[in-house]
Length: 190
Ligand code: CUA
Image 1 (tube, rainbow, N blue to C red):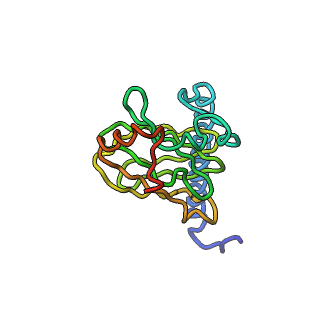
Image 2 (image 1 turned 60 degrees about the vertical axis):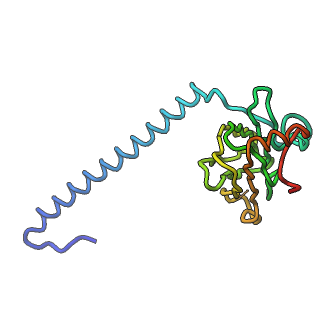
Image 3 (image 1 turned 180 degrees about the horizontal axis):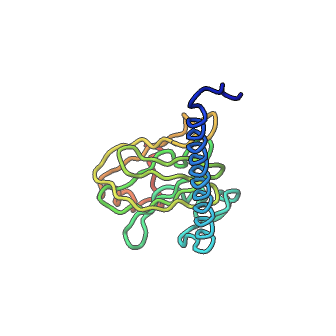
């Protein structure tokens, strides 16, 4: 609706129109910059894909490979390090209680059998996402014996709030003693 023509109107109208067009140019420039950034990062990712990415078929996790049920939990590698394999799926982690030693490098290899879940160990800096089709792989060391809660922190459906596990950190010597008798360790039965 045109503004009433008053003395001095035309000058202020022109000033407003100039300010408007300056802002329009500014917004177009910002959008253009963002589009360029998207194009650049997409091309960059296509040309230099992540090297250490590990994939796995979520539909056959339980049938073969390292994530079969009897292979889950903590295992001692030949070099003395510890590997923990975990699968997350609606609405549980398997195993639901992880047993790990303190003061020892612990390698986690975790994946999801269905959709995206969160993997966070309270009171530590462990915080990753589990994506179906990919293996989340990281190394951490627990300082001292403790019991940590491990809730799923990515919304994954109606049972999300009930999806959690525990991580029991025990004395290193005790852990390696228990490992002499068992191929895979967890604290599920404890
Ligand atoms: Cu799994 Cu939320």
